[in-house]
Amino acid sequence: MYYFMKRILLLICGLVLCFSGFAQEPEEPEEVVPRIVDSVAHNRKVIIEQYTGINSPFCPAAHKLSATYAAAHPDSVFIINVHTGGYAPKYRTADGDTLAKRAGFSYYPSASINHTLFDTNTVTAVQDTGLWKTYGNAILSMPSFVNVAASATMSYYTKQVDLHVEVFYTATAEMDSNSVHVVLVQDDILGQQKGKENNPSQIVNGQYLHKFMFRDYLYSQKILVMDSTEEPPHLIAPIDSGTFFQWDTTYIMPDSIGPNGDKVATELGKMSFIVYVAQDASKTIYTATKVQPVIIELPDQITFGNLGITLEQVLGCNNKVVPSVKLKNESDSTITSFQIECSGSARKYWSGTLLPFENLTIVFDTIEVTIGTETAISVSIDTVNGIGLDGGIPYFLNVVTVNKQAPPEGKGQPVLLLQCDRWGSETTWNLYNVETNQIIQSGGPYPNYNPAPTKPDTIVLTSVNTAGCYIFEIKDAYGDGINNGNGAGFYRIIDGETTVLISSNGKFDSGEKKDFQITTMVGIEDIEGSICRTTLYPNPAKNLTTLTISSPQATVAQITVTDMLGRERGNLGNKVLKPGNNDIKISTVALENGIYFINVVTEYGTSTKKLAVKK
Image (cartoon, rainbow, N blue to C red):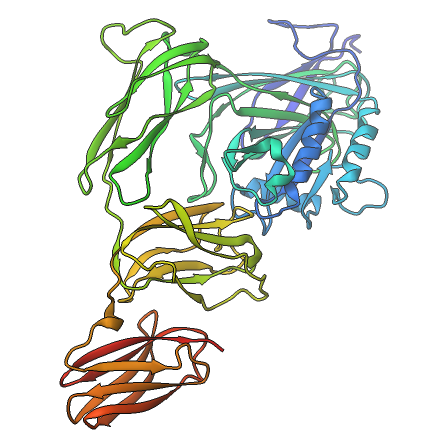
């Protein structure tokens, strides 16, 4: 029998990738490069696999708790935030849903700590956030029989990741076989989140900065050791002390991750791999490490990545826009200064520290464009770190076009149609007079509803009493709009002729603004033909109103009632009119609160009167 036992690693390919590897006794190393895995025994590491959703207001406080805990143990505690379940309309992945299902996830927030069952729990998902640290500390105090280390590089041009993993057993394994797992996480994804005020350190310009977000599950790989010194070769189990493995594999980093309509761009410098050794695919995790790929094959000169030019429309019936550009330092040099120019705006000089792969947004001064005509706007950088152009080629150049349209025009008294979602208490709105730059009318917060409303409220914007330019602003306190799975909210503003001036399906984050113009306060309710006069009393009406028609001579009038959307809500048929005043009773019992139009048509002319119903 051999004194040294030669071993062969039997590789069983996992979910996505498979790779080659080998095992050998530490007494017979065949190393080309020094090992990166430690051969000294350490305690176990902790992975908090947290299940979260942007529509759960309780999750940000849990994010803060787990991030604080990980920051206190930077090399021992790792976070994987998995967006899953009904409160996660964004950032979900099929693999993330599988992880949550395995853990028995059913409540926000909850987390699996090392995929371990604690106390009398029947699932690994722990709902009590106060226990996360308790269970984590218990794991950190336990000795580990295995260590793992990893290194990675990623090509700037091809996005190919070369991942190297090493595992070393400092003691005999608990079970006959183990497995290695690799997941991809991404930091600093800016988006919406309910309850973000409970984690203010991750709020940036009113949005939430998501961290440790689960993006992809690369593979799950069985570790089995075979003894080839006997015939036939047989499994050696459990894996004993001194066993060493190493693997090399490749992965192409996608440009974006997620289903259609919910893709999130991957960013250099924001992607990391978490590698862990576990009893099996969904069982106890023993140890882990985290590695961020080193970007290689970088451009020879300083290069700016273009993350987009934004042209913010300046509201208020004008020809102005505010350009801004988001840049990324895609070089291995630190940028300390540059000169940037935007057509139509003053040249800007920036100085500071922009590290490799960091982002920066430059906001320019307001520029003027021609209304209704495409205008080209260029942004260029011609001096970086005090060094000018080489051969006349800018460090950065991008051109976009803008075609700003005039705000919609209306006539007569405008009316707001507003339908909230279930959480009416989150909704408020303001109406601004552009000329005075003052709020002239406001609304909300509204009651919470269960079920969600199915008809809009009708609100007459009585503060609009002169022709001019106006801005309507709506806000949602939780940052998920009024149409995000808790009711189909929307809003419209129509003028006195029922023309829609502005509208929205309610799918916004914290809020939005729109402008409109009223060119005259004379609307259809004030336009009459040969009819001398029509009046309504009482107006507003509760159950009954009287329409008085003054006719120059005997005729027949056709009278209908329509709502703000132009739908017929009543038809009084033909009424015979005598010369002089004619009183016609109109029942409003069947009409809901809101604004309606009484339409009168005769051979001598037409008339439309606005009627408010208030019960």
